[in-house]
Amino acid sequence: MTEPNATQAPPPAILFVDDEATAVKYFQRAIGALAPVATGGSVEEGKALLDAHADSLAVLVSDQRMPGEYGNELLRYARERYPHIVRILTTAYSELDQTVEAVNQGQIHRYIKKPWDITALRMELKQALELAGLRKERDQLLREKLSVLQTQTVASRIGMVHALCASLIGPGRFQPVETYLAAVDLAGAGSVEPDWQRMDYADLVRAEAERSGSFGHAVGTRLAGLRSANAGKGAADAVAVIADALGSEVVRRDGDTVVWTAPATLAEYLVQPVGAPVSAAHAAWLASLLWLDEAGGALQFARDGDAILCRAGQRTEFFAADRLAAWIERFAEQR
Image (tube, rainbow, N blue to C red):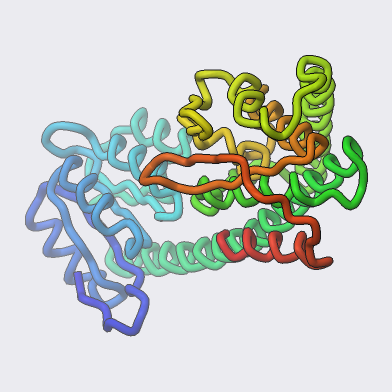
């Protein structure tokens, strides 16, 4: 395969898989002027080449009859793992059943029978390369659209946490929001990529509303329980109350420290895909922050290797008016 210039993207390339050396040479001679051609001699070799060079491959052309597995298997493999690659089946045999199966399962774009008509073969490959280019442009536009949608959705979730806190303990009390978002940031929320590709915008709004409503109800219910169960307790009891509320599957108490054994619990609502339910432990976590704020306390988070720790900390009495916007911008930069 031709090496691309270090400053340029790899050129679109064609992978041709056939066990006949003569067919390989003939194909390279006929098609090499259109695009770089990589070749393999078996289905297994073809799979290895796909795995190694999928990003620079635009078209896969596979013979049907080869030692071991048929070309159908290679085309199926490419469709499942690298759907951007245009797939073409070629064979000298009249294997109608396998060809129909490949078409029906969406494994191939074209079927080309051997012996090839060179002019027709070049035209087919030229069209396949053009189709691959269009798919690449479409995928790029889709990624850009999804990136904007993801940023908007995460921003909406951050706003929802703020609104939920205000509705349950009163407006102007930002400490629980600050602690919650600081913990999400420490847990590494930026590494998660929600999958919303199968939903249109209306589906997304509906699913988000249902998910947020369920989460808000769970937090409110858990906060009421904490108020009742911990009447008379205050900020000095924060570590014990939080450890008890979250349970041993999520945290463990180590003296005056809460150690998170399941750090992913810190970030569930903000980072999980649409439709993924928020656990009872995560609802208990936000409810605990609200209870602690009412008790006049706050938490301080720190990372110790792979562990995330929290202890009683200093309350912040004043937050800048743009603090929520600063958090939204921070999480947007991580996407």
